[in-house]
Length: 431
Ligand code: 4AD
Ligand code: MG
Image: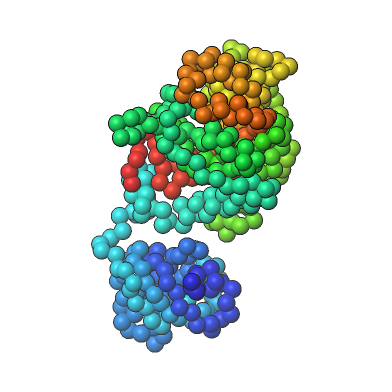
């Protein structure tokens, strides 16, 4: 897999001979010299064609080749302060690999809608590529962190028969005449897996048929979920702090060039643990002071989270939600105050809101049956899940982190779809 990338050129001494394979980003003529900017996965590089240096056919090709054509070229590295990055290539020979058929559809100034309709082409742009590289670094950071802590990465089903997070956001699928659903969360399967593996995580898509058209909702998102046997709420809150901070620092460490290109900065101090912890009741109090009146028991929606999270500089936990606010059947009630749950959401500061939802699970069989029934659900639909409480049940806790939401916050993206390769929203399923 040997290949010279554009980025390698900047560290090469003047006079080095190189062969590059890349795409044509821009083309211009200036005083009898053809200048191409070429693009590959590592960035941009200027290439000059001059009479006497470049072979005539290559120079002609350079002066007429369409943007986004792919090419192979050879040349010599020249240091030049006027060139972006301080180096350019003086091309001796260039040949096409795949010439573009007609003009590349996406031009400067194209509307967001047009860009999204042509996402398959737009994701070549250095900007989109930079977002995806940051996301990749974040995911790598997550895997490193959990791997080091002895977690096993597992793969859970996506086709399921029952809801985890309430029936309202289930996508039904015709399963040979039966109704199945696309999963909202692999939590229940992870809870089964901990009996053999104790510490597990998954990175899989989750689906939510949420009509909400907000900058923080996708209908398909990448869900990092983890589940730990013999762990209580405090244990997984500490784990979350460490995980978020480590993965964020991995983005900072690996993506300096991309961050510079995007004119973004990871606030590495802000992601340093510990993260503040407030209760749901305290959150209501903060919002009341900001003119947002909520009744105790109301859920915190996107608007509420925006207001609340603007009050913080660091990610922060909101714990002890009332049962009726969360609407989950699996969270354990707080033994000290049974009206609230042993759960915690992690909210990103600056208006970004929830990035993690998690908590301690009910591990007692009778309590779980009672909870399922209290939500009007049928225990028979959860038969296998109840088995887990029949045979050697243990206290356990877990959480789910939305990768796109977290990347949105870290990079300060206006919309969550910018953190997705091919975003799915209520109005978009193509390309
Ligand atoms: O808070 P949620 O619904 O929690 C669960 O699904 C738990 N079963 C997870 C667990 O404990 N294993 O979702 C978890 C996270 C949210 O905090 C958010 O980051 C993300 O998933 N998320 C979404 N991201 C993008 N678009 C949506 N529609 C999302 N819904 C949830
Ligand atoms: Mg949640």
